Image 1 (cartoon, rainbow, N blue to C red):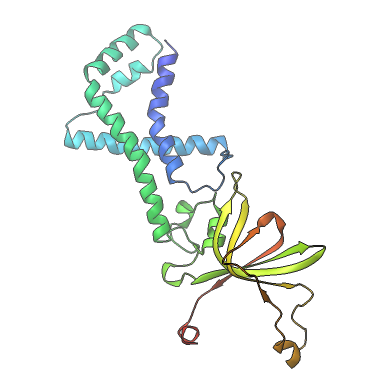
Image 2 (image 1 turned 180 degrees about the vertical axis):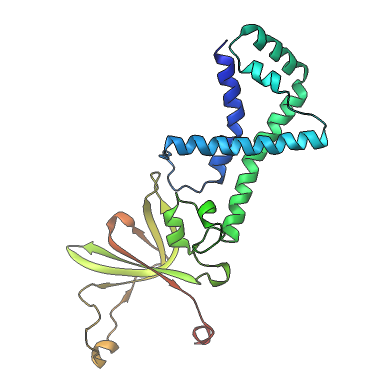
Length: 253
């Protein structure tokens, strides 16, 4: 028990920080978190220290309860007698300790998710935002590219179009359409794009280098029948993303 108890205490102290860190991050990779170990540990410790500081301050102001540092140190010691006395003290205050730990874990689960929603709602993580280095979701590059999240709230694009070259029977075709949704695989890679109003054309029917009236009058794109077109990213050779904002003249037209 000499070594097991201090390890358990450290785990319980850091658990709120680990929960908060995982809840506030927007990470597209679902299978494994490949963040450097030092980064994971430092972020967990920072979150745990901040949460415990807030909760201890609240307990002192509201309930007039203060941290008994000597009890915590005895729990972390390797001397059986000191551990026993500390456990007796904790057992005598079990309801308060349980309320502290339970409320702290609940806050660690809920508050970071609310903070993340606020960051995304007001685009506090976009390029050019003052708090971008602190609030940027560095593990979600597809989110910024395919959602328009890097635009200010009042300048967000009305829709996003995607164009991709796909090789069909050894002939390259260009597919284009309005992005409806996108899906990622467990490793965080783009899996498929769902397009509406999709069109296609052979790449050979590209724009002429010189203007030509007959060529301009000839339709180069052909609509793809169906309500939604699913494009697998693994089939795409290239991918082009265009952000389109409707103006007053465009809306009237």
